[in-house]
Length: 393
Image 1 (spheres, rainbow, N blue to C red):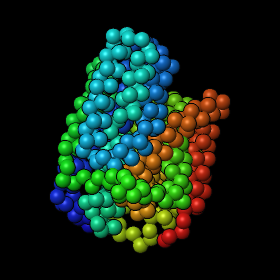
Image 2: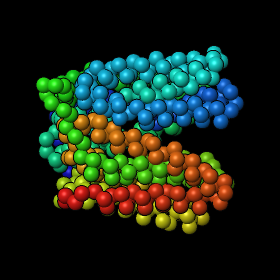
Image 3: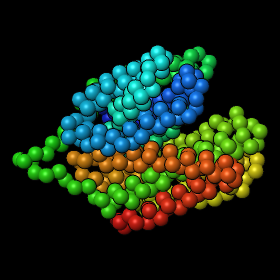
Image 4: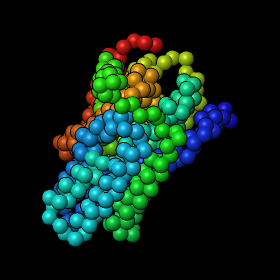
C-alpha cells in the first residue's frame, strides 16, 4: 500500500496522470518502428540485409538528431516542437511504407527512414523534464522518474510483441500502421497539454549566453549510458543465440521478457523508497551491479537457469537508469534540462547497435555463451565511468 501511495501522490498533481499516460502511447514507436521496418522491408524484398540497412538509417538518424531536438525543446517549448516533429514523423513514416509497397527506388526508402528517425518525438526526455517542472519535492521526483522507467520497460516489452504479431499474423504493414497511429495521436496529445509544460528558455543578446552544461558530470554519465546501451544490445543478441543453441529459439522472447520484468519490478519498488544516499552514489553502485550481473551468464548451460539469472540481473537496470536521470536533473540547468536528458537517451540508443554487432560477431566465431562477454565488458566500462563522477553525495 505504501508503494501505491507514493505513485498516487505524484499522479494526483494537476495534469500529471494525463501527460504520463499520453507519453506512454507516444513512446510506443520507439520499440516498434525499427523492428517493424525490418519485417516490412524483408517481406517485400526478401532481403534481411536491405531490411537491416533501412532500419539502421532510421536509428542512426534518430541518435544523431535527438540532442538537437532536445535543445529545441528547451529553447522553443515542448508544444510547438513536439507538434512539428510528430507531424513530420507521421508523414515520413507513411511515405516510407508507401515507398516499400510501391517499390520506389531504394534510396528514397533510406531517405524517408532517416527523416522518420530524425523527427521521432523525444517524448521520453520531454516527459521527464515535465515532471521536473511539475514536482518540487526530491522524493516525489524520484518516484516520477521510477514511474517513467516502468513505462519504458512496458513499452519495450509490449512493443516488439505487438509489432511482430501484427506484421506476421495480419499484414506486414499493420505493425508500422499501429506504431504510426499511436505515435502521432500520442505525440500530438502530449504536445497539446500546455499547462504542465516547462517554461521556454530563450537566450539572446539581452538575456545573455546559454547556461553551460556541467560537463564533468554529463560526460561520465553519457559514457555510462552508452556502455549500458552496448550491454543491452549485446545481451539481447547473445540471448537469442543462446536459445537457438538450446534448440528452443521461440524461448528467446521469454528470456528477454524475464530480464525486462526484473527491471520493471525494481523500478516499481525504487519509486517508493525515500533514498538516504544521493543519485551519484546510486549510479556508481548501479553500474557496478549491472557489470556483476553479467558475470555468470557465459557459464550457464540451461534455459531455466538462464531465465532465473536474467530475472535477477534485471533488478539492477531500472534503479541505475533512474539514478542516471535523477543526477542529470539535479545538475543540469533548467534551460538545458531536456537537452541534457536527450544526451543520456541518445547514449543508450547509440550503444545498442555496436553491442549487438560485436555480440553477433562473437556468436559466429565462438558461440552464444562467449558473446555475453561483450555485455560484461560494457558493464565494466560503465562501472569505471561512474567512478569518474564528481563526488557530491
